[in-house]
Amino acid sequence: MDLEAALEIAGVIIRQAGARALRSYGQRHHEVSKSSVFDIATEADREVEAYLVAALGEAFPEHHVVGEEGGHAGAPASADFHWYIDPIDGTSNYAASLPFFSVSMALCDREMRPLLGLVLNPVAGELFSARRGGGATLNGAPVQVSPTASLQNAILSCGYSRHPVHGAARNAPILRLLPRTRGLRWLGSSALELAWVACGRLDGYFEAGLSPWDFLGGLLLLREAGGRASDYSGCEEGLTGAELLASNGHLHQALLQELRPDPADLP
Image 1 (cartoon, rainbow, N blue to C red):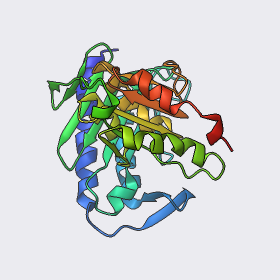
Image 2: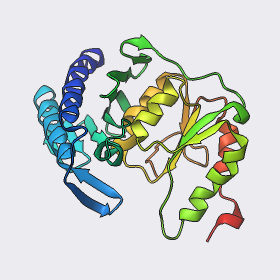
Image 3: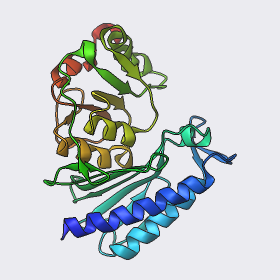
């Protein structure tokens, strides 16, 4: 398939989705809990996803489309190409009128290897996009990861685990890294955090317990911008989101040392 043409079409679709998200931004939202009271969806999530599913299904009828909120369209799950979409990544921020959320889309092959990745920051009007082998861009201009080579000069972002059993062990690296870095942020939109590592605003990002629509679009951006991604053991293939470390490459080994479980942290 013509990935360049598909990326252009997808860029128009994701900007339209972002415009729909902004229509309701700053308003009071009816929230629905999903897996827990901390995992919520709003009517805007469902509205934007419905648009994305319909638009991608029409533009790429031979592709399978799956959204975070359960929307499906296009070809069956046995298709050669699959779109993974997150209509609003960072719903808690969005619902609280905090301007850090994104729309994320990834086109993958059957093995969930990203071919196209798009992450839109609607508030800033920034579209990050990448095509496998074609580099990563921000509003059409090439981007690359930062040159930061030491933890003491690094600004990182992370996710925080509420898991009742494994949460303490998963969060232990945060406490270890806090005094050793220039800054550690918990921003709340995985896709946008990956995009910010890709363009050099952040030097690294790590989180456990992600879903495909959370990270696949940003994963391609990162790699095409010269960064590295792996699980906490260092494996870079077949990532599922159960563990994700993204970095500018220079810091990867040092961060892996911090993220590998310490027996003292285990329950």
